[in-house]
Figure 1 (cartoon, rainbow, N blue to C red):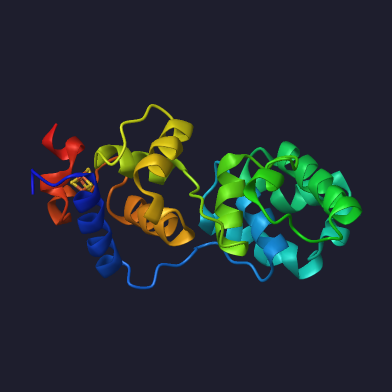
Figure 2: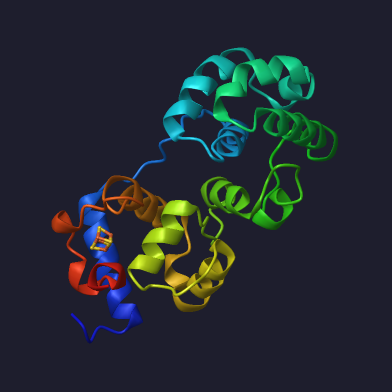
Length: 212
Ligand code: SF4
């Protein structure tokens, strides 16, 4: 396996990831594109489990950009305080909702670049959302993606943006939400930040981190 070039290596890794997670799924719960955007904004520095707890109550009462454009900051904060950074998140969700109502006919923009113009929507959020709702060829590099891609030596990057740039250059066939999901699930359940399950891992021979 040591002599695998980049393309062989990524093919081998994703064949195995597809076996590990034959039906990869987004762990955030949502029932519309807009709810997905709100859930991904809330997921910054927070677990998907906690976000789902919060949104299960929130989305019962508030569903559309118009609902969120008219909610008070104080009310929204009460719903989302347990996700952390709740003041900023509430402010951004309300501002974003107002812009969607006023400029986008209450729909989400059709590209990651446009999504990134909205308050509270950074590169990762925009890429994750657009890869799902617009099927856009982008990848959202979150903490799991960054860690796994670097440990496996698929990229050699110092930050998420460098990771994304190297990924786009080297792996144009792996720019989609499926790719994001597989690396995130693998990072969450096997290649965790602390105590990764290396003994169970099929990638030991390919892994820079394991080889030290
Ligand atoms: S060998 Fe360990 S560090 Fe490397 S990819 Fe597998 S779980 Fe992660």
